[in-house]
Image (cartoon, helix red, strand yellow):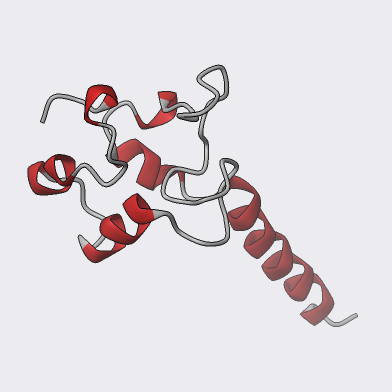
Length: 93
C-alpha cells in the first residue's frame, strides 16, 4: 500500500489546523493580547486581533496592517501609533 494518501491526509490536516487555531504566537507578542475586547461589545473577546472579523481571518484592520508593516513585531513605536484610535483603551507604552 502506498504511503502517499496517508501523507496527503497529514498535510491537509496540518494546514487546516493552522487555519482553525490561527496564529496565537502573534497574539502572544501583544501585551494583554489574549484579553482584548470588541470596542462595540466589551463583553466579547476579540480573538481576531488585527482582523476586521473578531474571530480572525480575512481582511486586516488598521492595526493588522500596521503590525504587518512593522514586520509582525510589537514595539514602542507600534504601541504609540494608536492604530485603533482609542487612546483611553490602550496600554501605557
